[in-house]
Image (cartoon, rainbow, N blue to C red; front, side):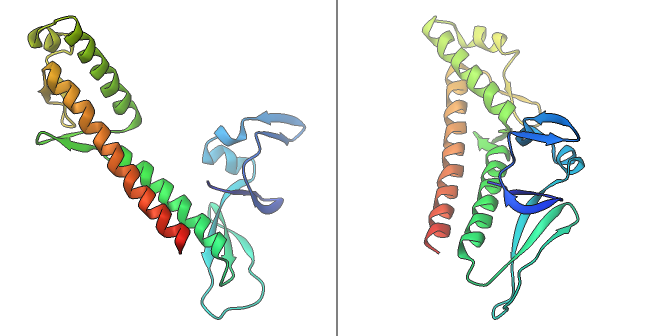
Length: 187
């Protein structure tokens, strides 16, 4: 979870759900874009470890578009929090990076995942209704398209298998993230 700090009070925290600014009430601060948050004085916080053997004060500074906190050596919880944030970002990127099935590359961004899931449900319904592969292919405009826009999956069984391949891709991403989580937590 990313923490934020305000320009007037640079103490790292979760974004408030309600925020009073310039006499008005701004709600849903945690749903605003990074640009809008910066306009309101809110910036993400990143922790950066000091060199081993360093001592003294660990300042927080606004550098570019983020606050940077120099973590004192031994500030393990701060390092773990940063590593978990990086792990989560990597998980989302891996999920959205696409997957291979039957020699073709398919998109796996959130919208593509939802469309594949809906098409799989449609294939299962078509199967239960006794629809032929030719009828199903017509239903999905000649076939499900790969990343290059070429129709490659045109059968009911193929669509269901594509959905299973998407599920396997998501499982691999989550499994890798969980392994990283365990490594971070036991560090």
